[in-house]
Length: 75
Image (tube, rainbow, N blue to C red):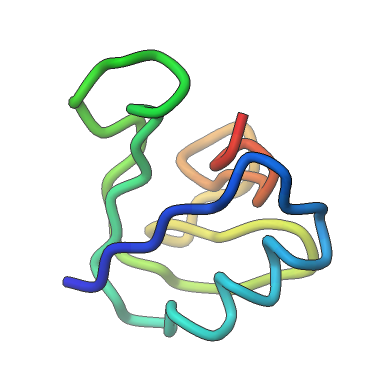
């Protein structure tokens, strides 16, 4: 699994570019908030089923389900 850390100073465009460069539909992904919370447990784990404008779709679930906005991955 590829590890990708979104820099805290990355704007939305840079965050989306990094995600699109390193993540593909079908990849298993864990989104962690370790830098922000100090925790090591994944906030979201699942299969990427879509890379949409501004968010990752996990397991065919919409935002509000498992899917997350790109900017949530760096808060």
